Amino acid sequence: MRFAFPPYGLVDDDGVMHLPQSLAVEYANRAMDVLEKENRIREEIKEGRTLAQVVDLLRWEKKT
Image (cartoon, rainbow, N blue to C red; front, top):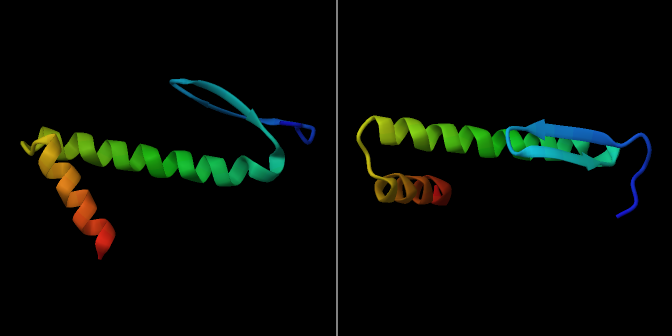
């Protein structure tokens, strides 16, 4: 992939990703969506639900 300069970097606990400025906002928004979903799953499990129950809940919510 060729980069439009200056390239931007997205950084999290898993590493760094360089990407063109034109994609930076889209990728940052997607990353935040993933983080929110992962945090929600963790909270549901802390409240006593199983992972299977949480996944079923998320599937049901996605359909509505």
